[in-house]
Image (tube, rainbow, N blue to C red; front, side, top):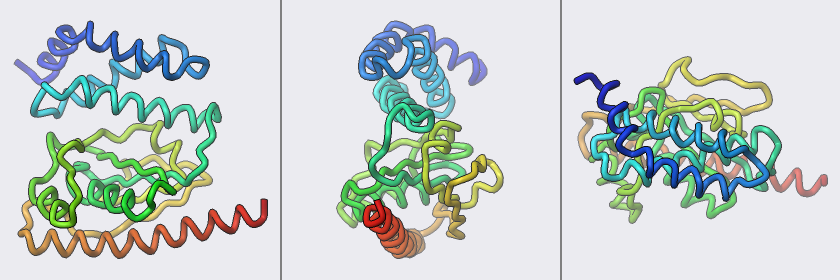
Length: 223
């Protein structure tokens, strides 16, 4: 059986669950999106995640989370909602290592003052276990995180897009700040090497937070 056939069968088996997720999200986004739009995003999100998911037991939960985040991003990019904080997107190939570490570290450093997302141009089935280990050494649990495919809506909603070796797969839109961080891929690396990658990312994150919050304060002063 091909991966496409497995995904199609899974979609059929979970149709009722996906409709319930759609109903919950449609209620949350009442007045912002039509029910049909919400449902399309839910089913698309499920299909995208099911292509690489190793354990299907968590698919409904990750689908709801992923679809909600995409719809929130879409609402911002269309001007339906206004974000009061800068939004940052980290992109690497598999969304299993560098971009996940960066997102977790920025969430801690920003303390709610920056909205953070991560994605992969070719997402893996699960996070790199060595990455999970080195992050747990800092007290950060990535156990509930999962690789997510890169989608146009989250790029459009972002103020800053930081790529990490994903090449030209990330779309370019005017008015956004783009950076490319040249970092070693942690896949297949030793614990010591991955710790060094983590520490380098943390140093870059602190610089990023300083520049973003300084820019925010400057805007507040002039407004």
